[in-house]
Amino acid sequence: MIQIANTLLSDDIFEAQFICDLCKCKGQCCVDGESGAPLTREEHDQIEEILPVIWDDLSPKAQQLISEQGISYNDTDGELVTSIVNGEECVFTYYDENGICKCAIDTAYREGRIAVQKPISCHLYPIRLTDYANYTAVNYHQWSICRPAVKLGRKEGVPLYRFLREPLIRRFGEEWYNEVCEAATLLEKSKE
Image (cartoon, rainbow, N blue to C red):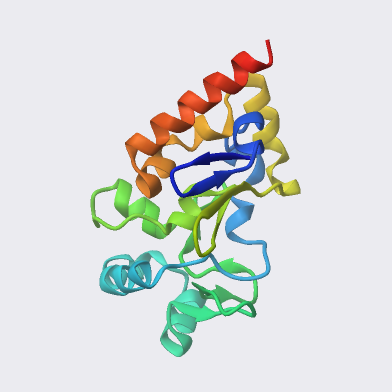
C-alpha cells in the first residue's frame, strides 16, 4: 500500500496493466453487476438537471423505469446507485451500431451537449474507491469481463494509473496524480 495525502493505494494500481478494449468486451461493465453505478448526491442532482437533454438517447425501457422509480435507488448496502433495467444494464446505456454498450451521459458530454460528466465511479473503473473516516482506499477491482483490457494493457505496457490519468485527476487533482507518478517511479527503481 502507498499513502498519498489522505488516500491509500493498493499496489495493483501501479503493477496492473490495463487499457479498455471495448471492441472485445462490448462495454459489459455497464450491463453486468449486482447493482447500478455508485453515485454521489451531487452527481444525482446534476444528472436530474441534464436528463431532458439525454432523454431521447435512452431506451424506452429505461425511460419507463426512470418515470416510475427515478434515476437512482439505494442498493442493499445502502449506497446510492443508478437505476438498472431488468436487474442488468444501467438506465443510461445505449448500444452503438457495433453492439457496444455506451453511456448516454458520456456521449452527450463528449459531443458538447452537456457539461456534466458520467459518474466518477464509472469514469474510474476498474478502480473502486472506499471512503473511511480518515482516508479513501483506492483499489483495483479485477473482473473477468476485463480480461481483454488486461491483455491489451500488457501488450502496450500501460499501467492502470496511467490509463486512468484523466479520471484520477478529475477526482483527486493534478498535484495528487503527480505524486502517484513519483511513487510509481520510486517503486520501479526499487525493483531494479
